[in-house]
Image (cartoon, rainbow, N blue to C red; front, side):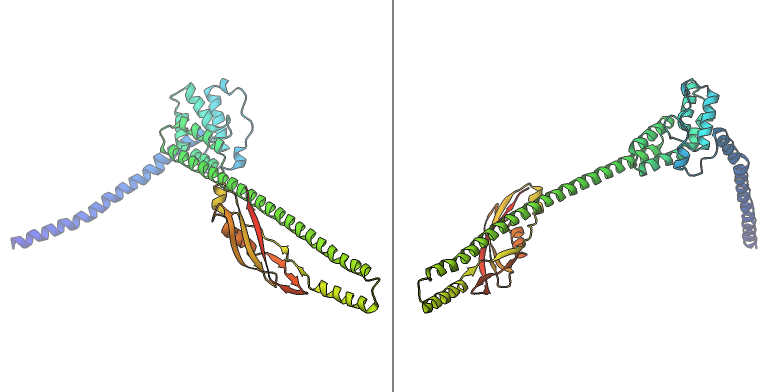
Length: 344
């Protein structure tokens, strides 16, 4: 009987303790909420009112672009500096422009009166928002302005960890920009080198075509002169002999062979590894011009340095287009050689 009574008493005590614990927790919560609304929030609003408004509104570029700094800032007293600081806070000029922003005015107040509570509290309360302004300058890649603003923040609170984050972001952005500029410069150099190589290849091709055209014109002129010479020699011959001579001339013309003529060249691609190593060289390539004007059986005869430019030269020759060689009026295959230069 005694044991059951003891257990019942304990259960009753535990059941009574739960509502009491809930009531105590509720009282603490109400006290915390009341302290926030009655003490902490009014105190913050009072500080922000004294320092020139609430900084929660986003900073805009138009707000920063305020009038020029007042004249004779160094000669202002504390009240004048605080008034200028409040104006700057209202216009959200926390850190910019230089010489006409809230932080510089508050720092001047502290120089004149190190213990000024209004200036100290305003700098502490506004520091996160001013840090956001400095971060915006970093993101817009205005690095000189961002560095000035970070230095100004460091004067207000040199031990604030936010400064370490801002400096890291500024350094990372600078490195990113430097890397982009290096890549753009390298790309421009590569494009210039490629353009120079293509220009040189085009000039070589033009010279080759000019030489081939001159040789063709010379051959045509020689063929054109043959009938005149044969006609002069046949003036004293008989009509039958004259006819035989004409037939012989026609047969001689049809037996002649015209060499293949390049009609479309292709510039050789400069190997990337050779371009980076600043290597130059040449390749002698032999190939067959088929009856359809395309190249085949492309081989490297000689190259210097070996195996560096071989593939690029062969790829270029494989894209050549020719007027095929002609024999007796019929297109035939022929063999040619060409030296391709690679110069930077």
